[in-house]
Image (cartoon, rainbow over all chains, first blue to last red; front, side, top):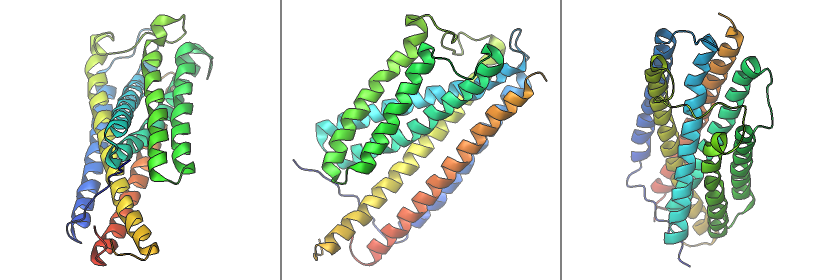
Length: 242
Length: 46
């Protein structure tokens, strides 16, 4: 089976120029998150039941949505890898999986912080919480698998299968609040929350989306460059020059 | 503001995660770029 990987570095100075763009991109997306959060704080009145605790929605819900989107990228990259057998798809899926793992863990932690004052508990074995925890275990397993398997083609094939299984759990997590009796409220969206909170939620979701895209792109770029160095090291170890 | 410690905890945690993950990502990109540049300069690029 052909396992193509032909990343190229056109000139020695190109990576440095892109590195500056990466740093500026990071500063811009983080500034947008700060601006969106400021907008949410300044424009939303206290909720009738939760008071100002409602403002946790502006970080918890965008983190959850973008974790789901990162899983969609994992799914797309995994399917494309199994179809095309091109390593770039495997590296894209892996980059998205790293971001998905962090955002899923953040979602659970933020939900726990929100749950304590509103539900009275940090954690409960509720269908939404449990299915999200299973999602986190799967994606951590995906990343562990990648670190255990050295042979690139086998690593890519196995992790693609785990990535697809993990992504298939996302609709279960999303629908869990409708399919089962649960303590968790129904899905929040700009159309279901009070209009006073809709724009705050929208803007924070967009800001988190930009962060997620930046992280996946930057980690994908790093992964591609790392493969260039690995391939060169392999060739050198074999005593050849390509 | 009632429950404000939970709001601080949520936003504080979010920013710690965002800053740490962004910083480690930038460091990884820099490291990968340095290694790739060394490869390109030594004529190892495919």
